[in-house]
Each structure stands twice: as structure tokens, then as C-alpha cells.
Amino acid sequence: MKYEKIAEGIFIERPNRFVAYVEIEGKVQKVHVPNTGRCREIFLPGSKVYLSDHRGEAGGRKTDFSLVAVEKKRRGDPKRLLINIDSTAPNKVAGEGLASGEIQLPGMAGLVDIKREKTYKKSRFDFFVKDEKGAEAFVEVKGVTLENEGIASFPDAPTERGLKHVLELRDAAENGFRAYILFIIQMEGMKWFSPNDITHKAFGDGLRECENVIKTAWDCKVTGDSLRVGRRVDIKL
Image (cartoon, rainbow, N blue to C red; front, side, top):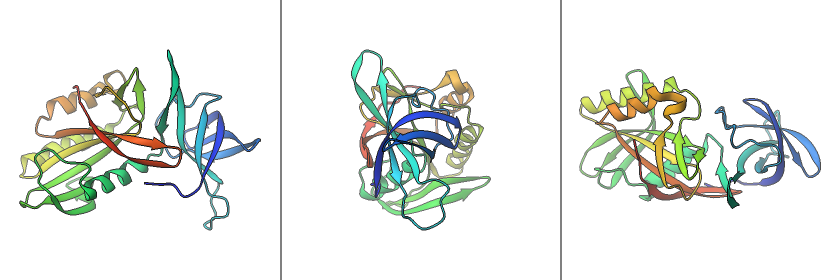
């Protein structure tokens, strides 16, 4: 996926989940944060950021800019890690990757049908897919922005909704469907992915206990104005 118009800025502060202040073109601007996660290790004063520039667009937006990506400084590494923080991006990247075949679901043949937002019992999953052999599957996508020493983790805040998705995926698998949780890592070069037990151990326990839910993780190639699927990343539960 590609953003239409991008501006660069310097992060100042994030007073609440939805708003940040960024210096853009020498002026402090109030901007939208399209991610309700904590992102404390990312949103540091002085960090270079990239933003969608909505100036001139119709629709009566409250802010002219939305945060897209942040350059994260890492201890002992002179090269900064570019992390996409747009929570709407993983579903778009997943949809593109599933449609193109760049993302393969273990155990599924070539996909012939991909539907978005399919309801199963009390959950609405991101995708419902069918392969050329007739197998049907639910796919739930989780965006990953948390990194520590080259290891990607999810979640960065407790997620009862995420745990509910895992449990209902297990139920779907018990009733004849294939069930997948697809982690889209919004950065590149990770060693592996692991659940963040420190923040929400119940979610990690759910992943480990629901053996019939297939877990797969893919990193992304990130630029200031684009995000596209990269390679499969190992998962360590």
C-alpha cells in the first residue's frame, strides 16, 4: 500500500491516545494518531516521523496530518528502525498479500475467494477465504509495532478483544473451518515474533493453548510513504 502525500516532522508529545504534537515545516501542529496502542518506546521527543498530509482534502477533517511512521532509535545501533504505526495498514497489506499470493497460509492451496469482515458467532474476523480445493478459513489480522532487540511482539497493551478472537478461531477450527491468526509486523528485519507475556500473558497462553489455530507472521518493507509485505518470520511461543 502507498500513501498519496507525505510530510516529514519531529515528534514532540502525545497528550492522549488520539492526538500528538509534531513540528512540521517549522510549525507545531496537532496531528491524528491512527493507533490506540501505547507505543511508548516509539513516540519519543525528537524522533523523526512521517505523516499523511491531508491539506486540501475535502471532508472536514479535524487535523491536517495523520502519523504514519516513526524512526526508532535503538541502543547500540546507529541505524534507526522505521516502524509504520498506522493501525489501518495491516489489513490493507494482508489483503494485498493474500490476493497476490505473496502471503501464503500454511495448509491452504491457491486462494480463489477472499471476503473481508466475515462474522462467526460473536466475532467479526478480518477475512474469510476459500482455496482451489474448497477449504474455507477465517483469518484474523493483528498489526505488530512492538520491538525489543530485534524481536517483534504483540500486544503492546492488554487486549481482551484479541484473546476473544483467538478463542473463537479455535471454535471455528473445531467446527470444520481452518483458522489463522496473521501477524503483520510493521517493520523489517526481525529475528522472530513472540507474544508479549509481560503485558498480557493470557493472550500468549491463548495462542499456546489453541493448537488448532494456525499462527503465521510476516514482516513488512517500510518507507515513509509505503508499506508492503516482506518475508515470513519465525514464531516462538
